[in-house]
Image (cartoon, rainbow, N blue to C red; front, top):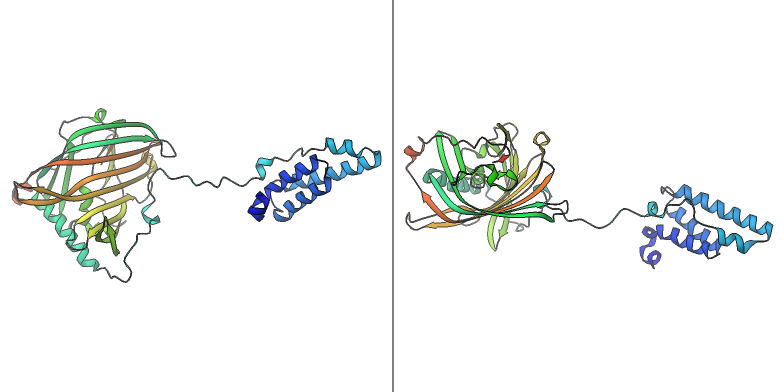
Length: 363
């Protein structure tokens, strides 16, 4: 059945068939099966062993005929020296990756024949991000963290959950330079995070489109897509090599390692609000044993009745990263937002936030 259904790809099965036939005393049929194997796979790693085996069987036949003990010779004939496992092809089962496919591996479904007004999409998205940076001094939220340490197949080895009082502030200490400081209000050190790794940067990721930041990236509107039933422009971005990298970094000990990002943003077609950003590292960073990182952040409108305004802020963030020979998955969820705002002049006087001087901090 294997030979009939597998055709040429089932040629290794002919080795088993040949062995069975020879051990049953049917030498000629067995040799024919082995010869067919050699015709289909002449350069196979075990081809030399099979040729020697055929010669050995012929020799047994010749010796048996001259001695008149044909039946005895057939009984003693074996496929010695042929490793059947070597004849098999490599495993054909596909193993699901523990992290999402890469940014450049994904083919996003786009509406046919729709031209993207690239400049307007990027400008309008940047305007909304600029308004957030101008109007908001600080906001807080309740953050739920779901953390898993994974094996190579993506199965959880250990799972932890934490809850934090999350605080983020956006300031412009000098014209054209934005500073984002994210922290947990409890002032916890790295011992308070799973595997002693703090992860932040989800509020700052949308600043890719801020007028002060977007020239650091190559951007291309790929077309009109869909996000949860809402028509959305899909914009691809990638950090430029000739521009400063101020978006993302890892802090290990006292050293900071900038990480170049590429990714996609989904921007609503009607109001040009960012609803989703997916990003990853442009290249691995073996110097800190960071092989991969993939983020998925979803944004949504948060209503602040006391301020009579709505702001688009992170609602959830997922991150997959391979760091120091460990694979991690994290999901951050945010709710119960509170908003603090000041005027622009006051805001520029705020000091630049500094990250805690601790090893292993991902920003």
